[in-house]
Length: 151
Image (cartoon, rainbow, N blue to C red; front, side):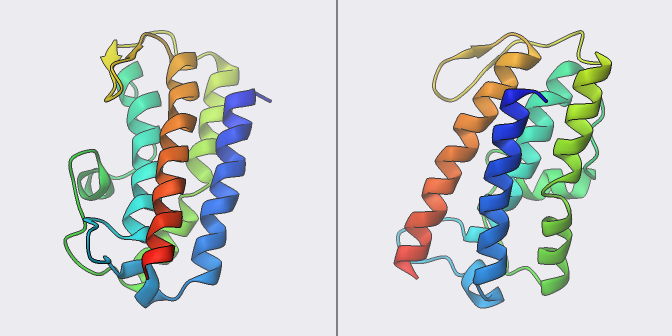
């Protein structure tokens, strides 16, 4: 098992806990002073992982273009999501990570397009992207904790 993928999987367990404990109203609420809600942050983590790992490797991930366009970098909460959409996001917590682990073990990540992230670091290969993804998800985990306090 790849260490960084294992860390991502454990973070997804924490994110799933928010889906278990919070109501649909709480997941959708954008408190004063914030621009996104809890469900946006969870979906954004799923989408960003796919973009950092697959798209920058020149590969197709497992997510639809629609979900990517709703939750990619630069987007924000535009509307409340339904329980059906929350369930879809829940279903996407683990499948992409499991597929990443299989693909990594199969050696499919051969090429990588360099990408400068918001911190100024430059990702040059999939291993750096896997590590940075955990940093990114940690930021959003903390953001979710702040949102919960503001509810």
